[in-house]
Image (cartoon, rainbow, N blue to C red):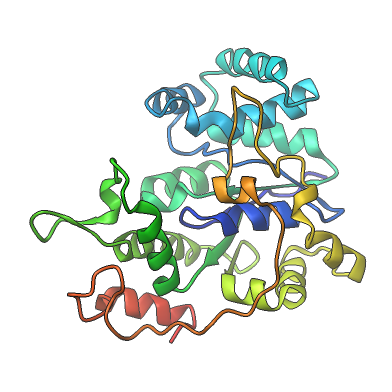
Length: 300
């Protein structure tokens, strides 16, 4: 039986990659790297996008093909995967996802996608082509995510326009705009899905109470939540893709996760939705739209 794939959807960050690897340690599942299949209408179109970023966009896809079809992630297997992919340039993302899912039976395909939320048409393409997809929406408090993202962007020569506030001149980096866009788009799409297809998880709950968070995911997916399964899922470093790849496909997941894939339980200090923004102190606080959406996710 072919189970519907599970996609962990979130903005860029290490937690989505780590959670995919954690779920991949369940006996019912197999995780894959980030595939980014729905940024374009075809795999060939995705390749054109990837060419503009030195191949970064398809590194996870090539690692997955190499492992599944050619039995390794060595340089030669990645080269074989590139040729295999080139011969299927007219495939839609759904065709590629189905190919992987069928190869992994009886295990369920689990992957992450940090590109879907940026554009509603990416999500529309996914839901049109894979109507039974299951979306696990991973959310983090906007203050912490924005603070860490602003620090990561500091000093970079190129900052994507989605992270900038163009209402002022010159434009200023303000990650709350990206947080709102990604989570708002995902939440809107999720609102059209049955609860069996859409589940929201707060990062803070996963980090502080992993057994409860993972049990909740297992219940949603219909998987066993036995103690052995919960223990295994807290060892993401054992995942097949939990580390830097070969020289011609180094990544395919968040770089911070690849450099340190272990899961560490931790209780975070409580962040507040109120007060000045550390990365932009001249602003009194979050935009009303951010506050409203964050409150929907049970943040205060």
